[in-house]
Image (cartoon, rainbow, N blue to C red; front, side, top):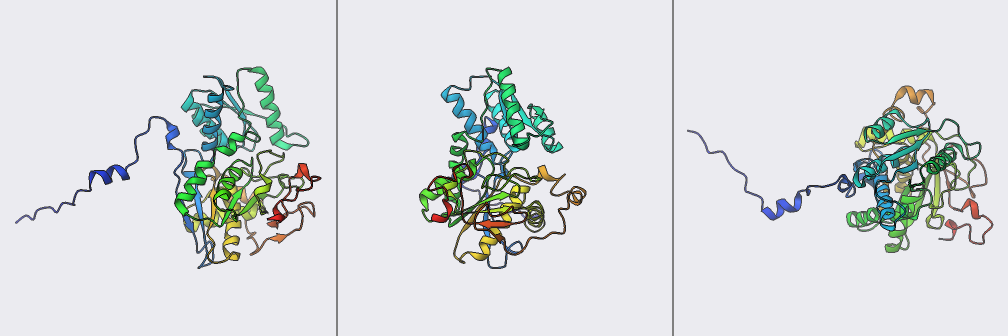
Length: 379
């Protein structure tokens, strides 16, 4: 005798609607609402860990947020007219965001980059309709970034109707990250320490300023790369992309930081690969660097501290670099696990750092003579 097939009790229609994601009319709706994941053992010690905001769940990464916001704000205020070209310098991730903004608002996009851009990123940008302009010679003082910025100026002169977001100095780059900070508040409730990478300064300033408003005693730890000038180190060769700079972006909010850590490329690779193997959540240079520092903060902070960091993108872009053995062997990136603790220096000008190093005196290198130039040590 056939037994009746048991049927599940229907879920209430209101619950179905609450759980379902709404249909979207534009790709911009795919941005935001990214998950937060607990990163614990074996990346950290067994009783410690930190929370990671996985911005790689956006279509192109964290800079989808700022590209959409900067373009939308420029259209509302008038500098960007309908259909005008967008021209910007980027090492990659902002280019994906601008391609998304171009598709959303109807603007052609030109990305000015350098030979270091990965073939995967070049292919994606081309697929999304962006035009790629590659500079071939670094600037003698400002490196590839300055060379790219000067090429942007040349292209803007040829297209007077074009608009450049100027991610390094545009305050809308900072404002774009208030929603991300609010998401972290909703997801975690309380945050005692924020660990963030620093490149253009946008997401560190945007997230940090909002969270500091809720938590006045919030500890903010900036993560830079060796060879970067942002926090006062001399310019040097930089293999890592997505954090660090050879210029001084004015969006960096030096007064927010309690300390800065510089991380070297082999140390970032070690952390990114370990995350991938043990947690299935990883990314490239920035993710490896911030995870390494957050791991140390989790071990050294009081046990009750709630630590949050931001993983700006996912691993896909880095399959030919961070996660490619031949590439890593060519650049001597493997077999150099980081120390348990960073080196310490008392001032960014003390010496040139070549490995993971920490400093609690944070200064704007362009305002060293100002009475309050050293801001991190005062907190």
